[in-house]
Length: 100
Image 1 (cartoon, rainbow, N blue to C red):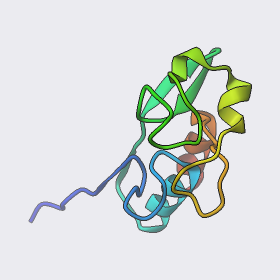
Image 2: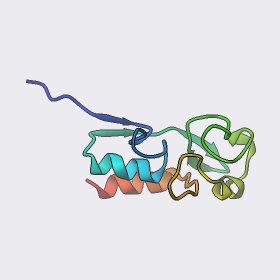
Image 3: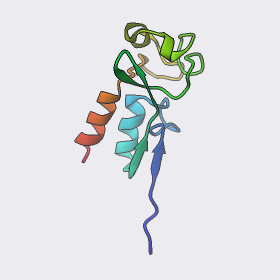
Image 4: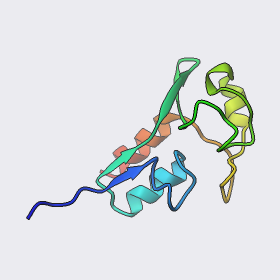
């Protein structure tokens, strides 16, 4: 019998705010086979966020690509228990690699 693969779409977005470190961590804890996140390049760094605009998931406004890294890092998440928008892809990849 073939094994069913489990993909964590935007991390474990049903449990934690989508495309966040907590969603990636939760997906790892839940034992998912694959974790999918969305990214944009801003000032030479990959930023983890799904929408091209900030309003739905953060307290910011406007297009992700029009903002500075400093501005993006200052934002708060709309659906977070604790908060700050931690948008770097680097940290998500490190978490995934450490779980191997």
